[in-house]
Amino acid sequence: MGRFRIAALVSACLLLVACGGTTKQSIRGATANRLASASHAVALALQRGDSCGAATKARALRRQVAGAIASGAIPSSLAASARTTSSHLASSIVCTPAPPPTAGPVTVTCPQIAKRKQALEQEKHSGDKHKKDPGEADGRHQIDEQEHALDQRGKSCK
Image (cartoon, rainbow, N blue to C red; front, side, top):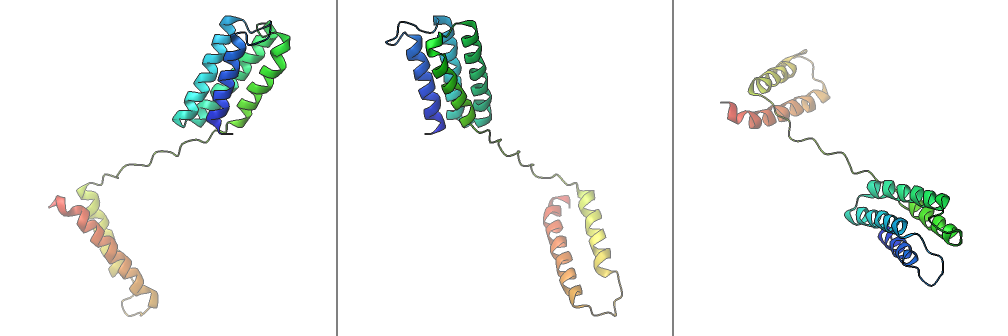
């Protein structure tokens, strides 16, 4: 059963019990309204895709149900069902945090671009010019690509 359906079911069950249903005992009106509102808040959080908020609200609902049972606001004939339902809801919602926001484009100043290009030029022309290392051509190619990218970024600097 989907998370939203579970929350909706809990909300509906609490609301029916609050209205008296077919039993002589029912949850006290103010308590029933508070629990139905809390259950509805869980459903709304799930509907928004806020699983962490829904999980927090479901745990709060479970504590409210336990408190209502302890205070006698939920009669003993309904206590086991209310406790089981609220516990099941709280344990069925898994908090999946949203990924962290990605960083925006990095602002690089014209002097930084010029300094990096100068460092790349020195790197490209450093070392023993008489050695013929097979990896040297690849390294120079990578430096050329970096210089080209810096040239593109630095067009507005001229």
